[in-house]
Amino acid sequence: MVLTSPERAIDFCCAANMEKTKIGRRFEGKVAIVTASTQGIGFGIAERLGLEGAFVVISSRKQKNVDVAVEKLKAKGIEVLGVVCHVSNAQQRKTLISKTIEKYGKIDVVVSNAAVNPSVVAILQTQESVLDKLWEINVKAAILILQDAAPHLQKGSSVIFISSIAGYQPRSPLVMYGVTKTALLGLTKALASEMAPHTRVNCVAPGYVPTYFAELLMKDGDARKAIEEKTLLNKLGTTEDMAAATAFLASDDASYITGETIVVAGGIPSRL
Ligand code: NAP
Image (cartoon, rainbow, N blue to C red; front, side, top):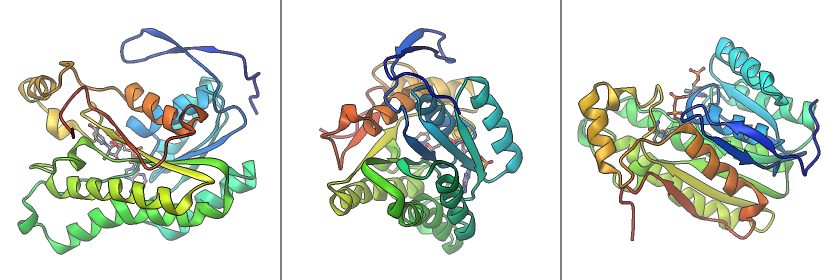
């Protein structure tokens, strides 16, 4: 187990731009579960929380991906537990929580990050089975994981949902996926009220981040450039950008913030 002093700050080398940023140790002694976290944004969040001192529990559908991600995090000195968990599998959700409790005894942070976008057709053409899958993974599983985690959440704990800029303006080709992400904005408000005052519930709405998930949208240079031009900052987001916002909301720096969503989208319009 890696335990370091709270005052110790470490150098975090941002893989995307190789700029060196000083980060603190806001999660010393805290236990953080991040779903769908063996690559992309979820992995970035797990890495950030771990570098800030958290014991992180990562998971995804495939054992091999879990094993590889665990090794990568351990190589950075992070205390990590890896568990296979397809978020729509009830038994695997229960195992995720029970193994966390077995090893660390409590839960301080839950980041609900799993999502699918199985279809790019119009809503009125979307098959019922696809509608079910979108609801099941993007919304229902997020609720069910919290039902399992709730008895173990500590006073001062924090839940973060990963929504999307598409939740504010659900449009083709992300239209029905976008609607499920809108639902997470409502879920954030509803659970913030239900879980107060002991647990804060907030949300991060990423813009466009070049991960495997977003490959379809950025498959050629022109598509990527068009997306960059939609932003005010004229660039795509990074997994580190999303991790920084998530870590802020999960930390005591945000101790008076609940029921809110931070849009991390380079200035793409979301709301007034
Ligand atoms: P990604 O790079 O494709 O990573 C997806 C991760 O989820 C992998 O670790 C994958 O591992 C795991 N996974 C997939 N299905 C799962 C399931 N049913 N249960 C458990 N784990 C599962 O995706 P990403 O871009 O980081 O997306 C993460 C979140 O950010 C999603 O909620 C997405 O909607 C949101 N988001 C992304 C963008 C973007 O531009 N990338 C923008 C807005 C919002 P296995 O294959 O081993 O399961």
